[in-house]
Image 1 (cartoon, chains in turn orange, green):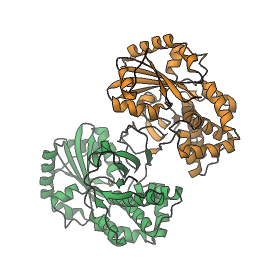
Image 2 (cartoon, rainbow over the protein chains, first blue to last red):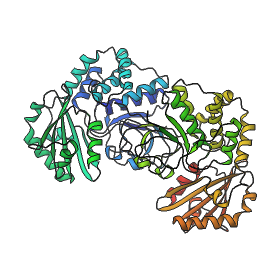
Image 3 (tube, rainbow over the protein chains, first blue to last red):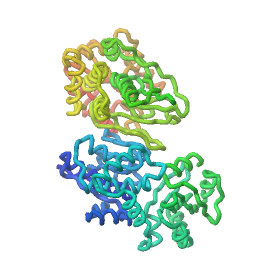
Image 4 (cartoon, rainbow over the protein chains, first blue to last red):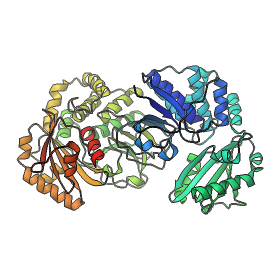
Length: 306
Length: 306
């Protein structure tokens, strides 16, 4: 049997890592024994908390894949966020909750839903296929949903996410608020990261029409703490702008307790942020009240105004 | 509540028409009352047979949609096979079994599986959502699966299609072989069509890399009968080549009884057919033994050799 690689996006977050593990387990339960979970980058602190809680190892790092390799994509579908050489791979399945950016020359299995987290879809796939959700799998799924929806408070949260959390928290025997806040706070610990690493943690390349951009999001329980590094962050952002020939680098410092985001915007199209939110940047910065979701509250608005 | 348009591809076949009806019924059962099935072109003879058998009307013809209209696509996802103005629509859902050719700027519901027919996927969606499959719905689904898989004989046929046929034939109280052959033969009746209509019946615009092509498929129980019109067909094909600035027009005349296809290939890249199948066209024609599936036995091979 030919091996199947299962992985989430580059700069992996908890959804990408846990979904690769949960999807791999589902495939095995359905009879695809030669399947393995991988990651396309370093584990963040939040994911580390989850894996430590369960005492399980992170998936292996995937550097590249051979031509015609069988792959299953979770939590992403854009080739720019995926493995090198994806264009020569044989994509068997995609389970995702993002906009559609992939084209193929062959039919495949796709399961996309506009929900807050890939794990919410995977939870349904387990049910539909009558595969038992173990305590470990439930904990992985639950953790990712808490992460992606910021404890069900993000505007990306749907009824399906809430239902999944209710179901999974029972199987996982977890107090959602208590565990969730601990987990989210673990994710805000930036102490061991260099500026370069912070700027790569959850960076997405997004083109707002012709405005070539990176939008990075860093969660925190205290915006002032992160802003102590403002000069170093701006220096790092400017280096990346130059290297990648970007028109815009937007850094969202998201306060997970109060649900706001402090934005630092640099690059020749930084005014796109001003235009999109009808605000003025001061010292390259602005506080966007109530904005916590890059997907729902940044990408569509910036795209429309670009 | 805002209206939702449900439709299959241009030059609709039985899968596109029945799937629009079956998906609309599912949406209604799930509480989306303002939903309506449409068609993007004339009904073919086979679909007419199905609708007559059930004594139901064809969906309304859809000429265009307003900006921001809610739409659900079935049996297609390529904008080139869809309604005008799709780029300004709000695509809620896509249920399909073709290669992926759509991009969106927003997340949506996608359910794609590499099976023989869209109705096989819809049959699963009914089950997963605990919606009863009525005799009428079962007949629509079953008919489309018989059509797309040529009575489960096409290489596109999967185990899932076979399972669906077993289940649906019981609900529909239909003898699959007897009903299926009658239905397929009804679809081969070209007597009431003009040459232009025959050439548009199941025509798909497909670009094999840079080779701009139309591949049309006409089912028959007797290839010689169709070839009596060869001169007129070639004249019509050449007109379309000129008008649409095509590099290739490939007409598959598929013998549904013996599972072969007579090909007529015209245009400056007609040699792509020769290269792809390692054959020589004689008088612009060749018989491709065992070839009945455009999707499985034509598109990938022609794309690879283009």
